[in-house]
Every structure is written in C-alpha cells, then in structure tokens.
Image (cartoon, rainbow over all chains, first blue to last red; front, side, top):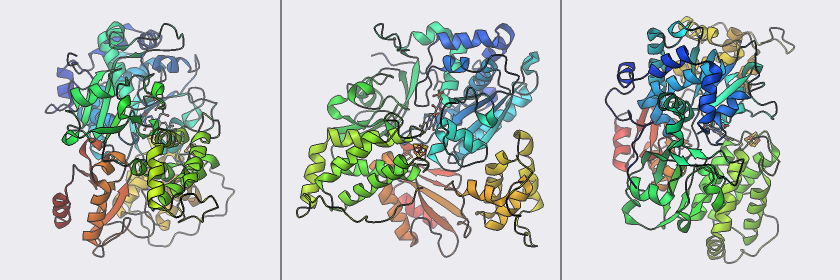
Length: 451
Length: 171
Ligand SMILES: Cc1cc2nc3c(=O)[nH]c(=O)nc-3n(C[C@H](O)[C@H](O)[C@H](O)COP(=O)(O)O)c2cc1C
Ligand code: SF4
Ligand code: FES
C-alpha cells in the first residue's frame, strides 16, 4: 500500500506550527474567507452533508445530518460545543491537533458555527491538557486580532465568539449531555434524551456538540471538497441503505506493546495488522500479539487472529466489538494476562460511572469487586457468569441506563470472558484450588466509592 | 439563575476573606462569557484552586456569594469532580501518574508504586514538607508516551525509574 499523504497531520511536528503566521502561510483561513463570501450556511451544510463526514468522537453520527436537526428560523442563540474532553483510554489525537495545529481546529469550528448559525462556541477542554489550553487560548487571541473572530467576521453578517472552558477530571464530561450539564456549572450527569441537544441543549437552547477531529475534517472538506473526501476510505454498502460509509482520513492512535506508538493518519478502513506493521514498526521487542482494543477501551477486544479487522465504522462490529469508537488501538503482546486487562478496564469504569443509573453504578462497582477477588486468588467459576450477566444487562442497548458509558463498561467484560474464557477458568482454578467451585454468597472485599 | 433562594441563608463568612481582590477580578472576567452565573462555577473553582491549591468550604461560600448562588449549589458541583481538594492544600507540585490501560501495559502502576515508595506517601497524599502530592490518574491522553505523568503543567513522557528518581530530586 502506498503511504498515505497526511492531511490532518500535515503541519504537526513542524516548528511554529501552532502560530497563526505558520497556519496562514499554509493557506489557512482562505476557506473561511471564501465560504463567508460565496456560500450561505445552508449551502455549506449541504457540502458537509454530501461529504458523508461522520463524527470522530466515538458514535460516528453523520455530521451534516446532525446540523440539520437544529430548528429552522430559530431566533437564537444557538450554541456550539466543541468536545475536547478526550478521555477515552488510548486516545490522544485531539490533543495532538490542539497542541500542534490549533488553527486548523478553530477554522473548522468557525466554519461549523457559520453553517449552524451558532454565535457562541465553547471549547470544553479536559483539565489535563495544559499545553493545548495555552495554545488554543493563544490561537483564539490571534483570531480576534486578525478578524477571524468577533463581530462581522471579514465584513460578513456573521459574528462569533469562542470561549475555552476547562473541565475538572471527569471522563463523563465527554458524553455530550454530561458536557452540557458540566458547562452549565453542574454535576456532569448525562441527560435523558429526548430532547436531543439540537432541540434543547446548552442553556436550554439548540446546541451542536462535535469532536475536535470532526472540526478539523470540516476545514479540510472546505479546502478540498466533497469529491476529495469521498475518494478516501470505504464506500457505503450498496446493500444497506442505512450505511453512510466510512469516508475520509482518520487519526489512529496506536499505543501499548508497539515499537513506535503514535498518532497516524490513514484512510478509514485500514486493518489492525496494517496499522501495526506499516505504521507502528511492528510489535514491541518483536513479541507475538495477543489482543488489541480497536477504538478506545469501551469498544471491547480483538483476538490476535482477528487483526485483519478493518478499522472503519462497520469493521470492529463484525468481530463482536462495539464499534470503531475513537480509533484508538491498544495492542497487547503475549505476556499480557486478560485478567489484568479486564481488571484495569473494570477499575476505570467503576471510577468514572457518574452514579445516576443503578445498573451502571452498581454493575461497574460489582464487576470491579469481582475482578479484585479473582485477581486476589479468591475467584470462583460462577463469577464469570455473574460478570457476563452484568455485561449483558447494563447500557443503553439493553435499555437500562441513561448514557453509553455503561455499554462501554460492558463490552470489555463480554469480549474478554467470551473470547478468553479458557484463560479465566484456568486462572481461577489454579489460584483458588480449594474454592473455585463454590457458589454461595461472598462477603465483599472492600467498599469502593463511586468516583 | 434564581436570585430568589428558598434554602436557608448561607453561613456568615468569617471576617478574613480567602478570595483576594485579584482573584475576585479574575473570576468576574468570566461573567460576560456565559448567560448566567451558575456556569461560572467551574472557572471560579479553577481560579481558587490555582491560587490556594485547594478549595476549602470558606472559599466555596465566597464563590457562591460572588456568583449569587447558594453555597450548597457550588459544593454540589465541586464534589462531583475529582480535581478540587477541600481538606488541605495540595503539594507545590501535584503529580498525576496514569494507571489506565496503555500506561499499565508499559509499567504505569509500577511507576506510581515506585514514586510512592520513594516519597513515602500513598496515592492521594502530600509529603510532610508540602512539596509533592502524588495521585493516580485515568488516561492522561498521552498514551504514546506510556508510562506518563503530569506534574502541574508538565507532561513527563515515557518515564523510567531513573527519570522518576531525578524528578523527585528536582523538587
Ligand atoms: C461515556 C462517553 C464519553 C464520551 N467522551 C467523548 C469525548 O471525550 N470526546 C468526544 O468527542 N466525544 C465523546 N463522546 C461522544 C459524545 O457523546 C458525542 O457523541 C460526540 O462528542 C459528538 O461529536 P461527533 O459527532 O463530532 O463525533 C463520549 C460518549 C460517551 C457515552
Ligand atoms: S450510564 Fe452510568 S455514566 Fe451514564 S448516566 Fe448512567 S450512571 Fe451515569
Ligand atoms: S493510558 Fe496513560 S496516558 Fe492514556
């Protein structure tokens, strides 16, 4: 396969790439000027719609379509939230864009606001990104000075303010309605939908929430056009009228047991194997692979013999995973214990469950307690069925919770135990030879808080 | 937000105020960015936390006063987030060591154990000299640099035991 010429990452890693001067030298903000002059918001929305761009934040919802859900002729204000909370374990592409090419993100954001007629945008940035915070703030200031932001941008009727809003170390603020609640100054408790944010979102006004990489794609589509975007990736399945396809370049985050961990740009649809071999320099220390997370920890697990899985929006689902998620691939070699992996995952979700829904709050915490017990050599075979019962019953898919955090907690449990059951059983029998067949109730080892 | 307050009145603030005029100004600068004061809660808490390295109850009361909220509203929000300490200020350096999956695969948990052992504290604690607070973190979004640690504003990348020791020495 010929190496793919990076577009989203074209400026990344270059000296001074975060400054306005650098960005404008590479043609930055030309599209903004042109779109403001030549296209109406509806026309630009149509361009994004026709590109079939799908959100890069995890759910893969078609971006242009989401924008059209806003009420027509609303008196305003309409709000735009740029989701820069990026906290899905394994994921760091938003950070790289914001640190090294903040203007690409901001131009995409301004264009997105123009299309949706939003006049105020908030960038909800996770607290743990101090460099991104500095660089974004600098970039925003530069934009006001250059007239890319503020009143009547470049002589048009369009005015926009962008504000940076910092989070405070909670994963759930990345869920779009948790983000909205947090921005409003409250606990980041996700809202029951409907109403969807497009109808009633931030400050009870129509709101669009999009991911940072989505905004960067919008800017590239404005520069290069729909045909370019659709020439990359995997076309829609002609036999499935509901498939929107997987078009465009994607930022894959590669980490774990890999020679060259990093963020790589490739056409949607490359396989895990290609990513490891052609981009990541192969397995760490040449060891054999055992498992991989296909798109952030919430998406579940692939076995090494499933690494031909294409990383497009439909690929991981065909291998029993939840989806493409954030396209963050975490590779594990043969030395890794799936007991440790699942324990790590359960600990994360027990820590991050916001506690609103009983199945999620209790399910994630009991899953962790069981994994603690198994790791401590006190596991029983029955625990595996209990874990699966939790996995099969928490989430918006089984319909028991408000948000998708619980589905993300469930998937690693389901995949790990169903794909590596032998390893779990062997571990339990070996570490608890006296009690592995026990089925009576067990007193909890320790109390674990919600957060 | 409601200026009418059905809840009991806030306790009288003690005479010595924790929020300096400069902090109050910093917080007020956020007012025009949002259509109401409640939304200034997190920005205000960040301002306080940056100056005091914690947000004691007294500061909560003062922030609430400034935002025309009841202290319980501010406390309700604050207590949701992992960031704000309330009992005692954090160390001069607050270091978060990642324990999530990519870092765990490259020795993140061992790194935290090592640091804790050397600094003689448990995760969440501050050294007796007030120089360092060590905490675990979930994914810091820097997984390509596993195992990693964020110390105040500085990201420490692919931290070896030697680098961890050098970090402790530099404090
Ligand atoms: C638990 C949870 C955490 C999420 N975290 C993020 C996140 O950190 N960043 C993000 O862009 N989307 C995140 N999402 C997805 C958002 O809810 C939302 O779908 C997305 O921001 C929409 O943007 P997009 O259409 O551009 O992808 C999360 C979803 C869930 C359920
Ligand atoms: S599913 Fe979990 S994280 Fe989501 S709202 Fe319910 S309790 Fe909170
Ligand atoms: S897992 Fe440690 S930074 Fe992502």
